[in-house]
Image 1 (cartoon, rainbow, N blue to C red):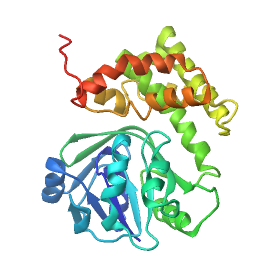
Image 2: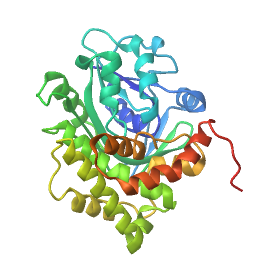
Image 3: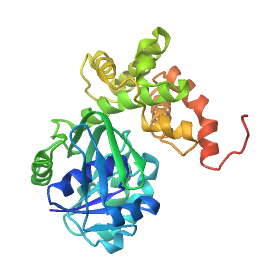
Image 4: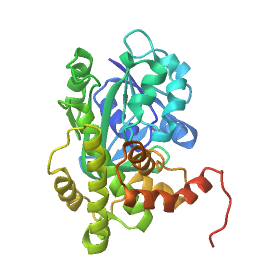
Amino acid sequence: MRIAVFGAGAVGGYFGARLAELGEDVAFVARGEHLRAIREHGLAVSSPQGDFIVHPAMAVDRPTDIGSVDVVLLAVKAWQVPEAARAMAPLLERGTFVVPLQNGVDAPGQLTAVLGAERVLGGLCRILAYVVEPGHIKHVGGEPYIAFGELDRRPSKRSEGLRTIFSRARGLTVEIPADIHTALWTKFLFIAAASGVGAVTRASFGVLRSQPETRKMLKQALEEVQALATARSVRLSADVVEQTIEMIDQLPANGTTSMHRDIVAGRPSELFTQSGTVVRLGNQMGVPVPLHTFIYSSLLLLELRARGELHFNDQ
C-alpha cells in the first residue's frame, strides 16, 4: 500500500514515521525548514516508546512530485482542510481514499464536498506531541492512538487493510470503531473542552484539573458538547463526561493542547473548528452552550489578529 502523509507536523510526522519504520512506502508532504531538515537528516522521533529516525524515500512540498497513492493520511490543521482537499488531486487515482486526522468533526464533510463521499473515511487520533525543531518530533505523553472507519459504518476491505498495516507498527494502538461518528464526537467532546478552557486560562492539564474552579469549567464544557451530540442523535456513552475527566486526570501535568499552544504563540489556531463549531452547531440546534460561547468570544480577537484580519496592541 502506497501512503502519502499530507502534513508532516507532529501528528502526521509521528504516525507516518511509524509506518516508514516498518518499511512501508510512505511519502511526506511538508514545507519550509521542516521539509529541508527531513530531506537532509531524516525525520527524528523522540518517544517514551523509543527514539528513532527514518529517512523517507520521498519528502516534498508538491503533491505532483509524488503521484498517485493508495491512501492519504491528512494531518494538516483543521482550518487548512478545504485548501488541502483541493491540493491533493495529484495524489488521487481510482480507489484512493483519504483518512483525516484533524481535531473536530468538520473534516469528513469538507473532504466529501470536494472529493466525493466514496473517497473519504472518518478518522481521528490521540497523541501529545509537537515539533521540537525542524525534522524532530517529540512525543511527550499519552498512548498514541489512531482510529478510522467508513462514514456509513459498514466494514470494508480498505479500512481493514490499513488497520492491518498500522497494527504492525510499534508505539501506537489502532482501531476500527463500530461507529466512527461516535468516536469522532467522543474525541471532540474532550478536545473542544480541554482546548477552550486551557486556552482561555493559559493553564496546563495539571492546573486545570487541580483547581476547583477550572475543574468545574471543564465539566461544564464537556456537558455542553454532550448535550449538543444528543441533540444531533450521536450516541455517546452515558458516562462520557466522567470517563473524559478520568482521562484528563491521567494526562501529563504540564500537557496542553495544540490550540492552546497556537493561541499563546500568536499563531492561527483551530478556534473556529473547535469552540467555534460548538457555538455554531449550538445555535443551529437550539442547544445552549454558554461557556463555549464565552470562550469563543474571549479568544476571537486573538485569532483574528493571528490571521492578520485585525490589528491591535495589547501591551
